[in-house]
Length: 56
Image 1 (spheres, rainbow, N blue to C red):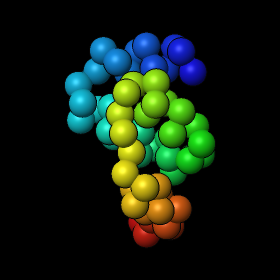
Image 2: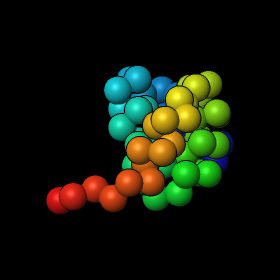
Image 3: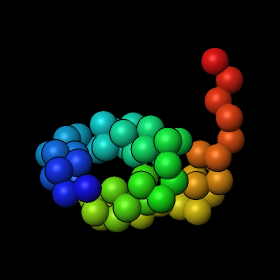
């Protein structure tokens, strides 16, 4: 967790948000913990959206 947070803390905010989106889709708890580590507040509605399937 510390490695991911440490690396992402150096990235631009758009890249941080893109990665958080991937993390939330893979595992909501993991995404939440990374967001907390980065000091990013996640709106609860964003967590609901991550649970929806993505049409390719």
